[in-house]
Length: 225
Ligand code: ADP
Ligand code: ADP
Image (cartoon, rainbow, N blue to C red; front, side, top):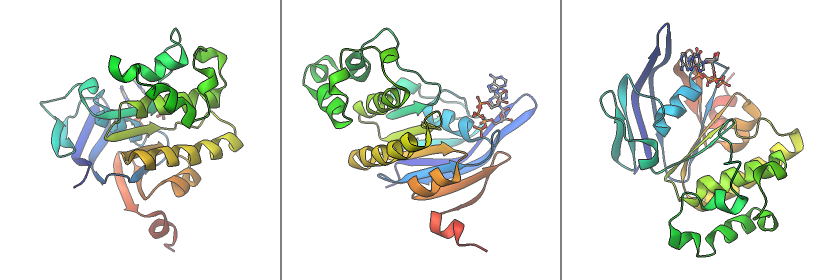
């Protein structure tokens, strides 16, 4: 069964038809990359999956259940979706441990799970620090495990590593792929970086002007003449 099914979604802003009939199917454990230039509709598509942008037409289903269409919008916190956005910061007044435990029940907060997650990304020794005391790369690792802590069915990543330097970015891509594969979640990754798409994606959807113009595996897309 597909984990995420997007069928003919549309989104207009006054003068702009930002997303025009986008359809996409993502299976559990699969990384699908939306690739394309700035302004082509990638973030708007991702925000509709997250529930923070209304649909004008089409439908989104997660794990077989309809979560959004033109009339209905299940609120973001009611969707089994995790997000790591470039501009979705950690909570500045909470410790690292509190950030990671934020979406968890009290029982799960007390279960050592937060510590385990922090150990998994090598940051257990920073548990009691505050976000501003960590480097950019460390903050991104925390954002990733915070999103994974709630065991989402779908993970949304919007240019998550673009602010990091080249070496750290490559490292983070590998770590993120390991964590996401372990979790078995369906992933939608937004990027304008074709190297990132090639490295991380099982399938790539190339967007332009609000539409998907081509779709396939990295091999299929890049072997074309
Ligand atoms: P990115 O290309 O990095 O995804 P954004 O999605 O933040 O950037 O913005 C893309 C374009 O959409 C920008 O040109 C911005 O001016 C425009 N935009 C984003 N949000 C709004 C808004 N609330 N009102 C008007 N324009 C917006
Ligand atoms: P991308 O993520 O590919 O850079 P976006 O989805 O952010 O593209 O934007 C697609 C188009 O929709 C752009 O033309 C952008 O200016 C416009 N747009 C996005 N958000 C808004 C908004 N809130 N209000 C008005 N225009 C917007």
